Length: 213
Image 1: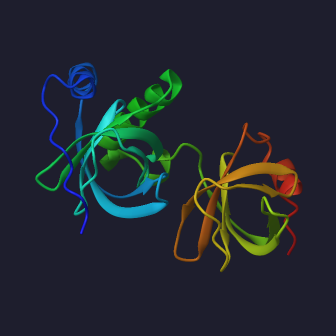
Image 2: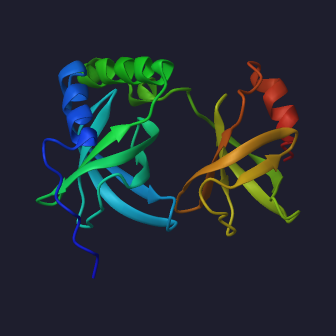
């Protein structure tokens, strides 16, 4: 049984800051599948993103989390957000993001696209277009283990691979000549986010990852 999350009142500085963020950033009603990752316990919780803004989100979640709990939110089509819990009541969790100014601007752009999604293809909502790419590659884990895998899709910001070995989210890996970080788990394997940006040429990117057929 999860511990009951302590109540937070309006005088709590985190709650006050969250309210200020809500006034500053427009909340957009959404209905998106998501996943909460709790770094302290390596726990993953399914959730639904109810509304979203560049500054935070409200989630529908069956689990309870204590105030100030650091989290990582993976929101379908919008990507990854780091933040902390500011409210947990009535089956909903309020999250405040710890985003850079650039990340907030990008999220605002994505929300504008989302609100006009009837005029756009879903791929436009993603940070970088992902191209289905088939081939074989491998990544090296922090302990030196070499993991052979199949490439599913590729973008300038990351790669999705098919593998039975799923390193913990957040683990750093080396894939070809590129450093990366495991950003998500999916049904067939893992998604790896490149660190420091990748080459802006898809052919050079494929060469650095050493994709073979």
